[in-house]
Each structure stands twice: as structure tokens, then as C-alpha cells.
Image (tube, rainbow, N blue to C red; front, side, top):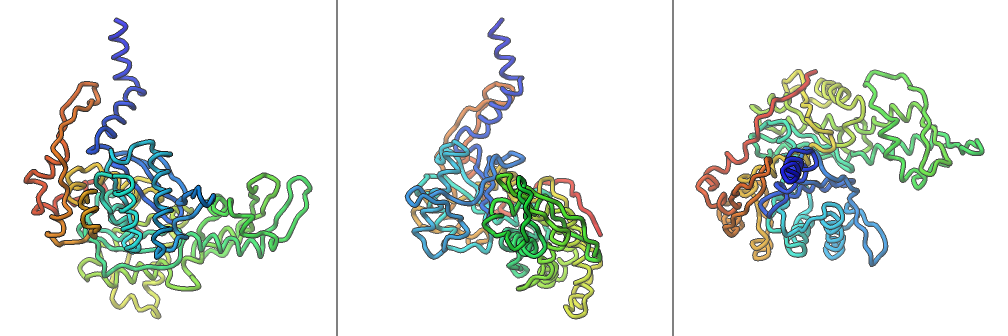
Length: 457
């Protein structure tokens, strides 16, 4: 009787269900793909099929020999030895410190920027395949991964990153490279704008003594640990026509002894750097320029399916200000976009995730589709033999055939949700079946049908 109760508790309790779910995801190399979304500021890591990343960590690695932390974005891409050293330490922490899994037991899906340096891609692949013996993996464009969250084949993806903003149209699952646009304005520029405004109009007060100091005493080193929180918790994006200055607020710095007074102009006007940059084009201009470079018959569809992602997008008022700036730039006679772009409105999708995790969620959805992963995967053996990492948009069938997945036939028994064993077929059978041939490659890239939630101007 006690054995029956114990079995019933294990199979039906939330704790038992969680264990079974994790086993079904992580057991064997054909299960539980690891999703890596390595950004300039943060890296999101987790397991395919889940709705949110398990960990969001800073994109920096600790080098024991040098006894210091090194940001990935600060490493010179031409210094291959240093880049490999930092990536190896970073990947080791991901697998052995955070996920606590063996790399050789799980495939990996890496979300990458189409503009990433070739040396960086190849070095990262070499670290995964040579040093950590990952069985096979997929390098997927992060813009394309975002579409899996909204169930669309075509959309205009705007990615506001830490140090840059990029726009990429995607038509029927294929990136339209001709419409690729890039701006050097990113979240770090807003951090610099906030620091500059605080040095001009802010105040610094000691909590114990009450002594106040002018804003010129506020340095970048003083706000190194708090500048991001100040932006997220005190700033917002004002309307284009709003000139009202909000009240100042106080924010305690790390340590609790000093308090910085964030004035109203810093809170409301620091975001203007995105639309009035000192160098390069604004976000609205690169979106319109991307639409202008797209085929004529695709422009209307792209303008009605705009997906904006990135952590800074979560600021209050971001989307409404972007819509205003697009309409103003479209009607500006100096820019002359109205001569070629005839749309009158712009519509934006509301993805089912926080703006900073949309890319990862798309990679998680893609990673759960076994046949699509096998079609695009590169094996460890093929990479070690050729040292080539094919581009996502490569249409060369000979290259795909050489790098195509070939795993040994293996059957494994896993536990179903009800606790009963069921027989599963390994990925090699899916790869060798007629349905996974190159003739149906287009069908494998079809995104799942999800009800679209969009808002119009």
C-alpha cells in the first residue's frame, strides 16, 4: 500500500512532474538542446522547449591566470588566441557552473548576429566542438529566431542592442540582406547620455551627513554598478511634442551611503539620443531606409509587421515614440521617403515574452523542432574535418551534404509524463527518412501558426 502511494505521489505531485519533465528534456543527446543567446551585455542560456531562459548572466569571463573579468565585446576579434581563451572560460562557466550538464550530451543552438565577425563565429564553433565535444549544433540568425515567437513567415525585425541597432527584413523565412540596416546607437549611448546630464544638472548627497555635492562630482566609476538601474527605474521615453519636465527623484547608490538626485530633464530627455544621434542615422531613419531597399511588393507587409526587440524597448513610452518618429520622418520633405514609401500607418507586434528574451524564446521554439534542427545542424566530426561553418543562407547542396548530420542509429527509453516508459527513435532515423531530405527544406523552415497580436497607429 505504501509503495502504491509513493508511486502515485511521484507521478502526480508537482515535484515529481518537474523531475520527469526535466528528464524527458535532458536525457540523451537528441533531447534538451542548449540555447545560447550571447549578447554584448548579457547572455541568456537555457534548454529548448522552455518558455524562458534559466539564467541571464553578464557576457564576461573570469580569467584565472590574469585574475580579472574580461567582457566579450572588449576582446579584439583579430587576436584569436585571446578570443579563444576568453570564450573557452565563458563556455566552461555556462556548462559547468550554471547549467551543470555535460556538453557532449546535448546539442547547442547559438543565436548569432548576421554582422558578427567571421573569426568570432569560427572561434566559438571551435571551442564548442573541439574543446567541449558538443555533438552537433546550429548557428541561427537572431533576427530570424524572433519570428518563431509571433508565428509569422515575414516581418521587419528591429533589434536594439547594447552598442548598436540593426534592422533586418525577413520574407518567407529568408533574410532579405538588401534591406539590412545598421546604426551605432545602442543602450550604452543612453547610459552615457544619462551620465552627462547628471553631471550637469544632478546632485549627490551623503545620507549620514546630509552634505550635498554638485553633479560634477558624479563620475562614471561611481555609477558603474548603478547606471543601468537608474535608466530602468527612473527614466522613460517622452512624447515628441511633450516639453513638460517631470519632478526629480532620488536613487540610492550601491553601498547606501550616497544618494544621487536624478533631475527631470535627465529622466525624460536622455532617450532623445536615439532619434537625434551625434553620428549616424536615427532608429526611424534606418527602419524607413530598410523598407525603401526592400522589393516594392513586400514593403506594405513589412510596415504592418514590425517586431522590435531588446532590453531598452521595455522603457515606458518607447513604442509610441517610435511610431511618432516614423510618421514624422516619412513626411519629412528633406528625407524624401514619401516619394517611394506609400504606407500611411505602421503596426507593431506584441511578442509573448519580455523584449530582452524574444530572441531566446524563438531559439527555444526552433530547438524543439527536431527535423528543422537536423536539417541545419553541423556535426562535430564534420567541423573537425573541414573547419568550415556554413552560413545560414547557404544554398549550396554539396556543402550541405558534406556537413549534414550523420549520427549512429540508437534507441533509448525515456519516461512519459504519466511515468510509463516509451520508446523513442534517435535523430539519425529522422535525418535518414525521406521527409528530412533537401527537397522539403522549405517546409522545415515554416514557423508555427500562432495568433498574431499587433497594434496599429
